[in-house]
Image 1 (tube, rainbow, N blue to C red):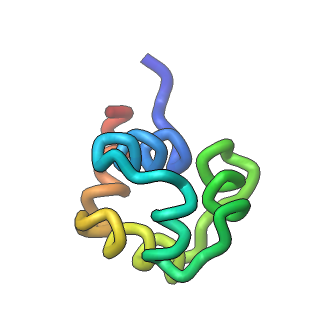
Image 2 (cartoon, rainbow, N blue to C red):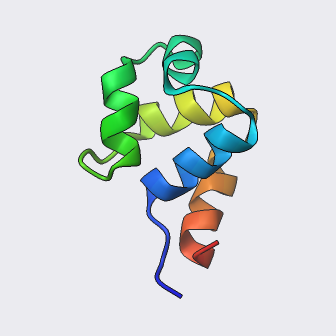
Length: 72
């Protein structure tokens, strides 16, 4: 199984919460196009971004990292 990227995990978590990219962007204070770029792997998140999106999704940042590492 190929490893998951940040974008894969982000998209999966967002969809599990039935949240649009626009809603996630609004809640996290980011631009919707930036969320799209993250999900498609065209941008690498900063630590600040990781904390913003994890808070908006209701998960701990370390849980996102663990999912990436585990290839969830």
